[in-house]
Length: 171
Image: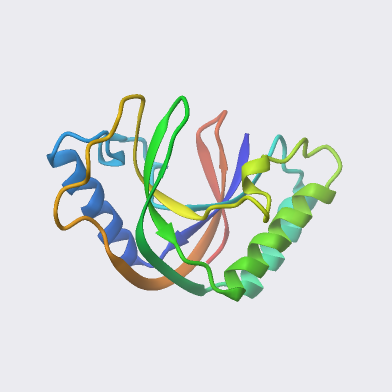
């Protein structure tokens, strides 16, 4: 699987990593414990089975023109399923919504990119930055859990989950 992700500015990244640490300190399955060098706070815009060179070039152009875009994190959101997720909710503005739609359209229209993830469809997308993931129930986060934070999405990358590598698309 190949994903197109946005990365936050340095101050926001530090705040998310601090939230990861606080959750880990109280025993939650925080992403602080995920030590792979590609593990960074991010927002997934779209995914595909494959990204051709032509698609990457189109993405690079669109993302380079769009970034930076405003970032607003506000409150927590939980997802259930086989893996439970605790995340910081992203409150998208019009610029982020347009960028999400454009990136998704490029992937949907690209021959050979495969079936898009339905959860990333604009009608179903719940933008978030993951804080913790695990199989068991999560207790309530500790006092001082993340509140509101403003910044910018400054960088875009392509993550390949098979090779566990990244390629930067724009910054």
